[in-house]
Length: 428
Ligand SMILES: Nc1nc2c(c(=O)[nH]1)N[C@H]1C(S)=C(S)[C@@H](COP(=O)(O)O)O[C@H]1N2
Ligand SMILES: [Mo]
Picture (spheres, rainbow, N blue to C red):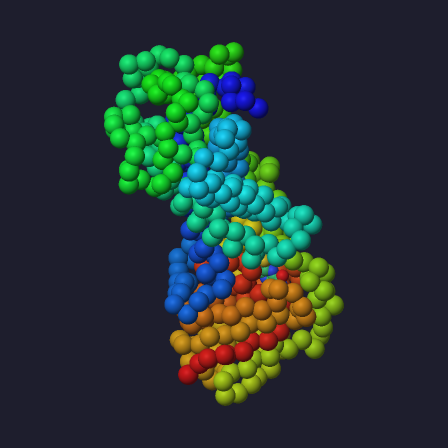
């Protein structure tokens, strides 16, 4: 466990910096798109999400899952490039160093949790997660973001130094030094005479036991002693792994690539009526209910209530829209939906279709996704339908027969199936 035992010469601040930047970019995209998804599903008062472009959420959530999956090899390589630091001695050099170490521990734990829980969710394997995935994944994201910002602030000088263009110093041909001055403490600037009283982040401490400060910028192609991968080779392998993961999964949302999506749990065109299914009618416990010949859609306005049977719904003006189901799990698929405009139903109930917040409820008795609120931006949109048909046929029971909500630019979880009740919550 002595530092000298870690003989891979490709580990260096430069490699770690490169991996760190790639990881930081992927994490930032993943974080922002994830927060957007959370806000759309749990909108606070100040938040507004448009109904157009119809596929915007499909894009942001596809990006969220794709960047999250691409993070897997990046994170693995980044941890590999720094893990010998775990065995440096003494493990803690000062209070500031201890605090920095603790923030790295939080970052590593949070990042691993996000990647593992995200992959489990995409695979719909909930058994190893004895907690509610959505809340945990959301809050740990903030933990990771905070720890990451701290980490970036502390390591920025090291990264800047490691990636400085003076790659070949006076001893540029020396092999990169071992002992890995990577995490934990920012290194001193060599041309700075005084090491005391520097107004830096507080953790900057010279490595007194590190004699060789030159040659750290050895060429990217540096060969390790015993052959094997060069530094550039490591980066290429990590990039290739991320590329393979992307190519074998992104077809779950990018239909032309679906033939390559061997690792994707869902394919855009596979399912009843050529569309994947999230919860089946049987799984949701509504298989009998939806076949009830006495089915009525209960429509409640702020001033009056109506009850519509299927022939009455079919007698209302029918409209057709091509809209995607974009599941938070990363798959998405477009369907051709036909049915009644939600705004027409609001008007039928005597409320203003341009300014109504609507609660849509399923025949499903329990379940987290049995109801959804439609804000005025989406109620008003003529593409928002209570769909009765998919691809010209009556809805398959698994797609929400007898009626389902389908609205533009919304997460799949908000596209309520087996609709039994529509209530105008606020209107004019
Ligand atoms: N009542 C009800 N509606 C629901 C769900 C549900 O569990 N119950 N799942 C939602 C989710 S998570 C998705 S992705 C879409 C999927 O629609 P599909 O099965 O028709 O593709 O339905 C949504 N509507
Ligand atoms: Mo979903």
